[in-house]
Image 1: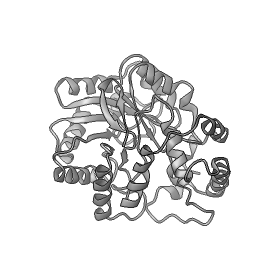
Image 2: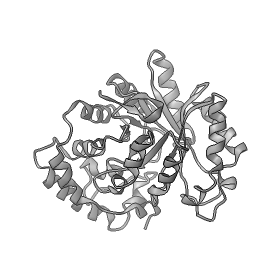
Image 3: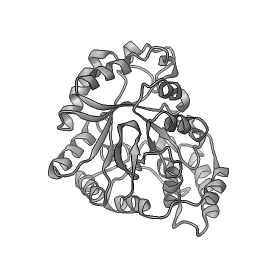
Image 4: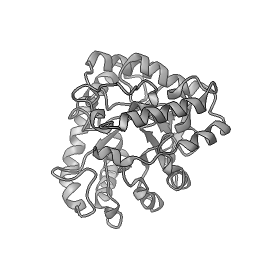
Length: 326
């Protein structure tokens, strides 16, 4: 497994990280045994970066990670978690929401202590706010609170996971030195971050975590027009109506573009996400040993050619609004 520097924090992190949403729930049935085996296998293969969140199974994902890391106490593994905005309220937050209502200091401290407990840690590697609104950029009091926790030695790094509909809302925060890391959607369909977001992160020494590199599984190459998602799987909403058919048709065109230059669509998708130098790590969702092996193997392969990357740019497709459902 190759590593890259994680921005100004200077960590050497694995190019392929472990996306831990599915092991907490939300993607259909998932056994804890499969989750534990998947984590162990990814770590065996050199993965040393795990991304989770309090919202993944109401802490279940964090607790499973803590259990596995206790069994491997000789490994240095970086764990990033996320704190959701306080409920009730819109997701992502409305521009009319007050940051003091959604991320007040007492709430953030309570949530910090919760993750310290669930992850079995004295200090968290990276705490990210799970979503954001551009309206808070002028007075980001929640980030001031996280900097206070950082000075207290409770967290090492501060980050934000982009709101899907307005990812560039974090650019000014990077320029003004608020963030150690950002988490962004970047894939063959969603390419807008290449214009301004990724260059800003690189210029200002901000670590970049790429999520959704496989477009919520469509670039895994296995979906068909007849795919049915089980109860409890958020993709029932994401691919509602005619969306699945339209997506599968576009993935087939991507497959034609790739031809024999890469092993398959998911390999090409992960390599595309890794191509920009600004990217620190890519975190595909991993829920079993087979996915751990397939995803981690990509780091050991040659980088995608400039020519194929250029041709794949033609498949750009703006659809961040899909997260709101039909």
